[in-house]
Image 1 (cartoon, rainbow, N blue to C red):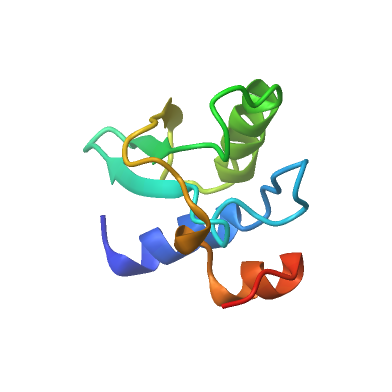
Image 2: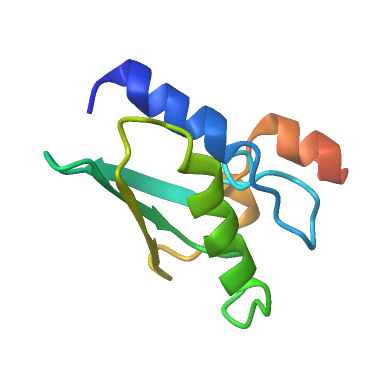
Amino acid sequence: MDKALEENILGALENVLDPELGVDIVNLGLVYGLDMDENGVLTVEMTLTSMGCPLAGSIEANVRNALADLPEIKETIVKIVWTPPWSKDKMSRYAKIALGIPD
């Protein structure tokens, strides 16, 4: 996947908010990896802020919806992983400011 497409994907994913925190999944550091095969199947490897997140299904659906308009992507697979565990250290400066977390 070229850099421009990766940036477009991440830009689209910035529209997916964590409903509990109100900050997007990219700036929260929840997106761990993107991999697209030659058939246009994109696998988004991501985590959630907690294992028992009741909104996991909603977030997965929002990821698929956010990427649906990108013509290069024919299908999106969302793979939720727990390793490495998410921590506040993965958050961008923007997310920390938005949530009032000291840097």
